[in-house]
Length: 350
Ligand SMILES: [Zn+2]
Image 1 (cartoon, helix red, strand yellow):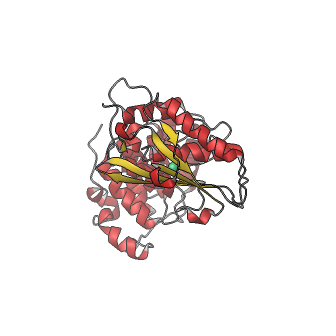
Image 2 (cartoon, helix red, strand yellow):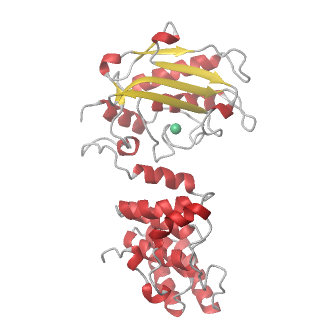
Image 3 (cartoon, helix red, strand yellow):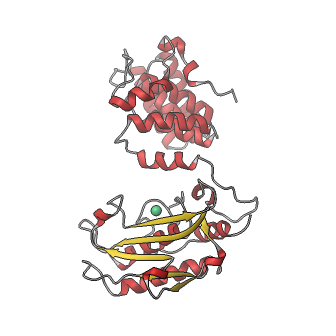
C-alpha cells in the first residue's frame, strides 16, 4: 500500500496552489462558513451523462456487495471527469468499506477540496484514518470537521470517536471481549479497594412528576447487577445519611437540570490522586416527549452507575448498557458480558 500522502501536499495539479486544508481551521472557527478559497466547482456542478451513468451503476454494484467492481466503474468515471466531487465521495466511501484506509483518505481529500461544504468526505476521511490507525490525521481533519459543521449529522459520533483516539488503556492480549481502551482516555480512574463497599444514599423523590415507588427498587437492582457483574470487585451498601455516602443518587422531573437535556441521567465524579472519591447520580423521572417506563429507568440507572464506578466513556456496541445512545437496548436493559469484562479489567491490576 502506498505511503499516506500529506494533505497539504496533495493534489496540487488539480487544485492549483496547495489548499493548506489544515491551516484554515482558525478562519473556519471564526465564521464557520468558508475556506476562504473560491472553488470554481462544487457539488452543484452538473455531471456528464456518462459519469452519472457509471456512478449509478457503481452504486447498484456496491449495494449488492460488489465493491471491487464498483471501484472500477468509479475509477473510469474519475478518469472521464476528475473534478466530479460525487465520484470521489463515492469512491472514498467504498474504499472505506473495503478497509482500504489510505485509498479512502486520499479520495476523501480530493472530494473535500472539490466540495468543501459537503460533510460526507470529512466523515469518511476520519473513519478511514481511525481504521488505518492514522490518528494524527484523523484528529486534524476531525478538528476541521467540528469547526466547520457545527450542526453536522454525525457530529456526536465523530466527537466520541476522536475522544477515543486520545489513547486509552489496552487490555492484555487474550482478554475477553471488552471496550477498555474506549473508556480510559485518561488512564484508569477507579474507586480504591479500601473504599469498598461503597456507601450509596438515595434521596427521597418527593413530588417528582412521573416517579413511581418501584423506581427505588430498580435503582437498587441496578447497583446489585453491577456488583454481581464485577465478581465482587465493586460492592455497595446503603448509606445512613448523605454525609457518609460515596455515591449520592437524586431523582428529578426536570431534564433541563442535566448537561444534555435529551439524556435520562447524569453522573458526576470527583477524583483525588486518580481515584474516585465521590459520585453524584441524577436520574430523570419525567420527559415530555418520552414516556418513562420501568425499562427506561433501569437503562438509565445501569448506565449512570457504570459511569459512577469508573467507566469514563462509552461502548461502541449497541448491545452494551454503556453504549452512548440511550434507549437502544431498552427492550432488555442489562449489564452485558462485554460491559462486565470491561469493568473487571478496569479494576484488575493489569
Ligand atoms: Zn453515558
